[in-house]
Image 1 (cartoon, helix red, strand yellow):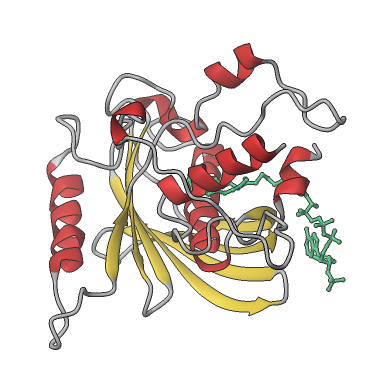
Image 2 (cartoon, rainbow, N blue to C red; image 1 turned 180 degrees about the vertical axis):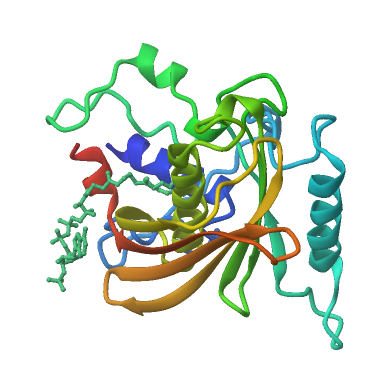
Length: 251
Ligand SMILES: CCCCCCCC/C=C\CCCCCCCC(=O)SCCNC(=O)CCNC(=O)[C@H](O)C(C)(C)COP(=O)(O)OP(=O)(O)OC[C@H]1O[C@@H](n2cnc3c(N)ncnc32)[C@H](O)[C@@H]1OP(=O)(O)O
C-alpha cells in the first residue's frame, strides 16, 4: 500500500505537477509527533526517461516556430530578476506505475500489464505519425497552452483529424492543467463543440484557461485554434473532480 502511494506521488512529482513539499501530504496519514526519515537514493538508480515534449526531426516549421516562441517565454525573467511565469511541462510515455497487485480488492492489474502500460497519446513509436505536442503553463495567468502537430495516423474524415483524437488532446491538456492547478483529478465532464475541421498534418494551438474552482470541482475552458488564432476549431468546457489515491486504487 505504502509503495503504491509512493509511486503515485513520485509519478506526479516527476511530471512537475506536485512540488517536493506537497508530494506526500495528500496521501499519507502521519500520526502527530511522528518524525519522518527521508532516505536519499543515488540518482543513477533512476535513469531519466525520454522527454517526449522536446523537438524531434518530425516537427514541421510551424511546430518548431511555436515551440521556440514559448520556450523563449520560459527563459524570460521578470524585472526583479525572478523566473518568469511560463514553464514547459515534460512529457513521458509512462504516467504512473501505481497499479500494482492490490490484495485488498480494488484495482488488480498483473505485473505484465503494468509493465506494458503506456500513455495513450505517446504510444506510437514512429515520430510525427500521431500526436506530437508540447505543453506550457503560465501560473500567473492560470492558463496552459499546447502546441499540437496532428500526424497522418489521426485521420477521421478524409484529410482531417478524427474527433476522438481531438477530444483526447483536449482531455490531456485540460486534465494536465487541472492537475497542475488542483492536484490529482479525474475528468467528470467534457463538453466539446466542433466548429471547424482540423487538416491532417497541421499545427494547432490548444489554450486551456481556469474558469473557476469550487470545492473539489475545477472548471476549465479550452479553445483549439490555428496558430495565428484566426480559425476556431473547437470550444470546450470541462469539469474535473479532485480525487485521492484511494479513488484510483479502488477501481
Ligand atoms: C488519473 C488522471 C490524472 C491526471 C494526471 C495528469 C498528469 C499529466 C500527465 C500526462 C497527461 C495525461 C492527462 C490525462 C488526463 C485524462 C484524465 C482522464 O481522462 S480521467 C478518465 C476519464 N474519467 C473517468 O474515468 C472518471 C470516472 N468518474 C469517476 O471516477 C467519478 O464519477 C468522479 C471521480 C468523476 C466523481 O465521483 P465522486 O464520487 O468523487 O464524486 P461525486 O459525489 O459523484 O460528485 C461530486 C460532485 O461533482 C458533481 N459531478 C460529478 N460528476 C459530474 C458530472 N459528470 N457533471 C457535473 N457534475 C458532476 C456531483 O454532482 C457532485 O456535486 P455536488 O458536490 O453535489 O455539488
